[in-house]
Image (cartoon, rainbow, N blue to C red; front, side):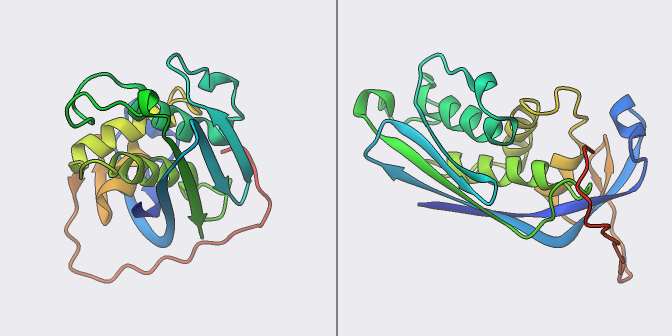
Length: 199
């Protein structure tokens, strides 16, 4: 079993412009996503979340594009780990695919969906850390790189800013990913209209 928990985010300055390469300042917030990954005896990837449950077969050439968008990052990540032939993730020549093992991934989130607080990015970061954490603890840089690849299965033009602050926490400047050391308590009041929308 591997468990990872990461925060959501808010963009303080540079919202939307960040996708065009403009600098932005982001901060982590006190809402989190927790992803738990366990091995199963089935050659499938099962994903449980508040959006539903799906179960898909492990494929050497996965067609994650055919999966509903909200589940794509998890199928992409699991298949990448489980069918990857290099030894970065596998001890020796062990392969999940050859041993009929599968994964069950459970997502628990207290970040509202579709309100710009980074629920998708937080899920990608937590899933990367949890899924790959079954074998080894990744560095923050590795988690960020892989989680951005996963996020691109939903948002091809992502800047990576959301994943960066979900990975590192605190307050950062993007794209330098430079930590901003604040010596003051920053309290944010975030209003939620409770009307989900496409961010």
